[in-house]
Amino acid sequence: MNTGRVNLKAHVLVVEDDRSVRRMLRFSLTDSGFEVDEVDNGVGAIQKLESNTPDAVIVDLGLADGRGANVLDWLHHRADAGEGRPVWVVVSALDQDEAMKRYGSLGPHFIAKPFDPWKLVELIENLLEKRLRG
Image (cartoon, rainbow, N blue to C red; front, side, top):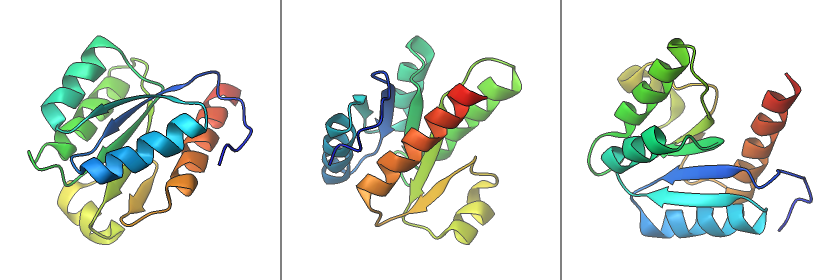
């Protein structure tokens, strides 16, 4: 389901430990024209982010290694330091209120699992377009 939007080959990092969810996201994102990197843990995500900042990051808060919040902290720290940052979307099996109680501010967007991958792609496209405009 290609949405037809131009995303200039935007690069998305998917940080998700569930192989089937990663596969679903990879399919949806690549079908929409995105370049996709995947990692299944927080340590790998931070290594990827330090070596090459993507345009967008999808982060699962409930990573098996318990480091989903560390990835968000890294993104927040980078933004607070005035460095460029990707847009991000947080996905979680928790509802938003419970996730905010546990993790504090979740950034601009939160999606509870299960979610529609095409809606997530549309959200990423909208966030990237908004960043380009302003």
